[in-house]
Amino acid sequence: MRRRARFIRRVAVFLCCWSCPLVADEPSTPPRPSLTPLARAQARYLVICLDGVAFDLAEEMYRRGELRYFHPPVPLIAPFPSVTNTGLVEILLPLGARPARGYEDYYFDPVANKMRGGIFQRISRKSFIHGTFRELFDYHPHPIAMSAEYALPVFGPWISGHLLLASLKENFLLSREPVFLAYISSTDPASHVSGQGLLRDLLRRLDPMVAELRRASPVPVEVVVFSDHGNAWHTMRKVKLARALRRAGFRLRKKLKSPRDVVIPAYGLVSCDILYTQPGEEAAAAEAIIGTRGVEFAVYQTPEYVQLLGPRGRARIYRRDAFYRYAPAEGDPLALVPVVERLRADGHADAEDFIHEDDWLRATADHIYPDAPRRLWGAFELLVEHPASVIVSLEDDYYAGSTALDLFAVLLATHGNLRRTQSLGLVLSTAGPFGLSPAADNGDKLPAALRARDFWHHLTRQRQQPWNALRLPPRRCLTLTRAAGLTRPF
Image 1 (cartoon, rainbow, N blue to C red):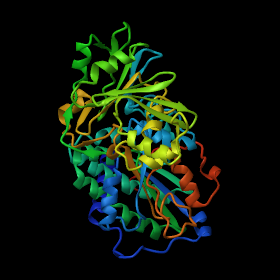
Image 2: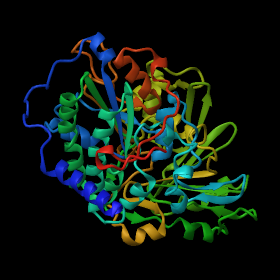
Image 3: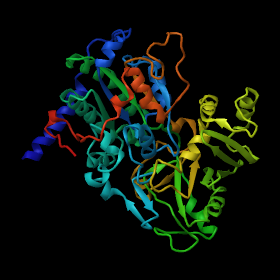
Image 4: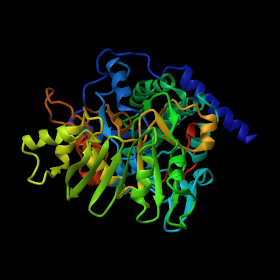
């Protein structure tokens, strides 16, 4: 009986948030002027991660007047691979986030020499939340609810998204946290399997939610929305790496025993692939797959450089502190030679063509591969406990991953590669143009792009409070709304 009552309350919350508009007025001008510096420092901030929302989609909706409570969106460059674990770890590092256990939740542990994670550990709070970057969220969906979003094809993520947004609003109003950090998972599976129409409908709920929060809160409320990576919509085809590896003499295994064994954790449906080999076999594995249709390039790390090879050529990327050098040996696989020539002519390269990472960012913010040198090095450092031997970036209309998920998911969009559309998340803020100083003149231009690692720096600057004000210890997450009687702390 209690379970039935809880289910009825869930349905009621969904029907209310869907059928009843949260705001009656539709202002053609900004809803109210920006807060004064003192009021901004006293305001409560709701900071929401919407998983997998692409910058291009948000920009289009903003230009059409669909996100009127927010200032213009700013692109946020995800790390590589452009997946949730790496993206959120880099974003949350200033808050004390730990490296992810793997690039995905099903991962290879080379120390134990076995696969870990997967669906059964994903639905466990103890393994999925505790000891991970997810502990930093004040609000996080229950792991079972996240997994169930795929249970109802097409409409599952859309229904879950509406329920979670209603739940989030209630939990924020009940909380006293000055900065309330929340995670909404539904937007990423909505991108994958629901299509742009239903995803847009979820995003349209942001404006009325802001209006309701401001009416209901006794103190000023500002809302900042960000995403951990983008998504690209294409007609999708699955890449066939296993066949190429077997032809080269490799054996696909779940453990590494012999020199020609290779482990490929297959989880989700994404446009990158992660390979683990025996030490010294990285180059051979990369060579085996670069001729496969759909492979854009493969990359592996050595102590001196990151080696990149693909159908369009080969290059090495060297690093010296915060300086990077792009050294093509055959062709120009990342199309960066003109960028290097321009930076050299402008005096931003030293005698050995090492260029500071900030100059790389400014020069490649609109490039097909934004901030590529730093991101390729970062793929093997800091973000995951067990870095890959080889990482494969696929073309936009190819994907790799779970055969089981492939059986019932019609893939409409995906993410993971180094390219711009899949790499660019977003930041939207009601408090002011994100990335600009609060004292900036109206004529100042928004930044071309921000790095994921710099998100909290810009948030504290916008909020005009010291950096330490946001260095918060891990807090207990709330899974579902108290309004539905389903709140359970982790």
